[in-house]
View 1 (tube, rainbow, N blue to C red):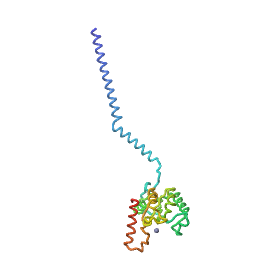
View 2: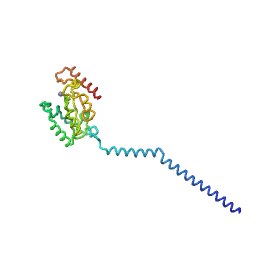
View 3: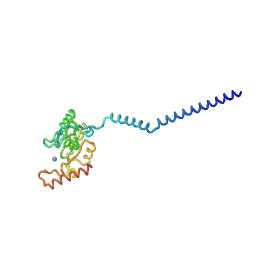
View 4: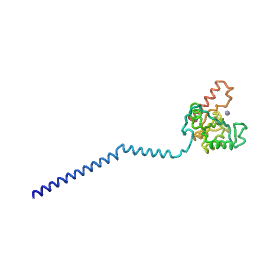
Length: 238
Ligand SMILES: [Zn+2]
């Protein structure tokens, strides 16, 4: 009888030891899971895998615009040479087209854009041109600067739609006094701002009143340059 009681006591002691052991294992397992699933390290690695997924998604989404400034520039060893195509008026309206070698018909102009595009030319901005001509960097081996003088309204009505169609860039040098006076046949600041916002056209100075600078006094030359730059800076925040 005594022996059986002792055996039972022993059994109870062993079973409590086993219960405590199982409980301990359980606690350790929960602690282990908590540390590894909820630690900042786990969060960081989750975050970084999310980031790399986002980056992958970003890189596979085609860019809506293939502007020269977004392309990776090359670094050459020689001084760059930049072909510049200078235009004044491009229009389908014969009455708006003074007979001059700087002026061409819109159909010819579109064919020129198509030819440049099919030959893989990159059209650059004024800022790009400055960088190309003062460093050995260039956006592409084939590049061209399309420039327009005088700020004719045909830049907005005829040329801008084609630049959008072919996603090409041009620079227009405007006569700021003519724009300020809202002179007929000349771009308005609203049209200029809209074109600039598109990223396809940028604007530079072509003086205030379009005089022959070679015949002007130094003071007048300075006024024409400084005032036109101030007009551009004020209106276009550039
Ligand atoms: Zn001019």
